[in-house]
Image 1: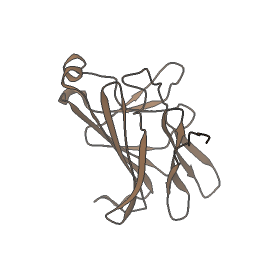
Image 2 (image 1 turned 120 degrees about the horizontal axis):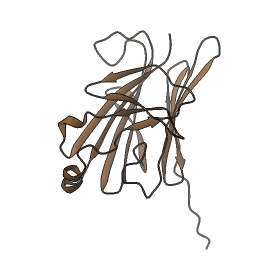
Image 3 (image 1 turned 180 degrees about the vertical axis):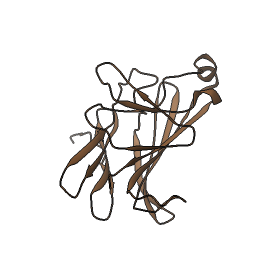
Length: 185
């Protein structure tokens, strides 16, 4: 009997016409994701997550080890959980068509991310401003709409790019951040 290790399956969502899509693929010990927008003229813009390594308590982007695709209130949704160090991460991701998903009648389709991390009490106390958030590479970046108290921070160094971070002033063991990556109109 031979044993083999299987790679967890990819998860993908897209708009009806396929112009905006999100895809999660397994990368070493976690899922990485890419949001891809293709305009009517054929121009392609991608936002790729910057991942960390297994020895980081707070990697550049949350470490997600399990994903499922469910339908929530009629909208296909990717749900994910994972951990790094002693912190537990979760995410909900939806592709929303024009004018779908909130009170604002958006002119662009978008991918909505709702992230959370639960830290231990000692980590939250020792690291009130932990390096939390989701980072994207500097190559290209889709327009973004920040939700709630989420902030955007430009990153320097080898990976560069943009990082979306939770409001650190609230403190506490649970931190949240949310944003939409927009398809151009």
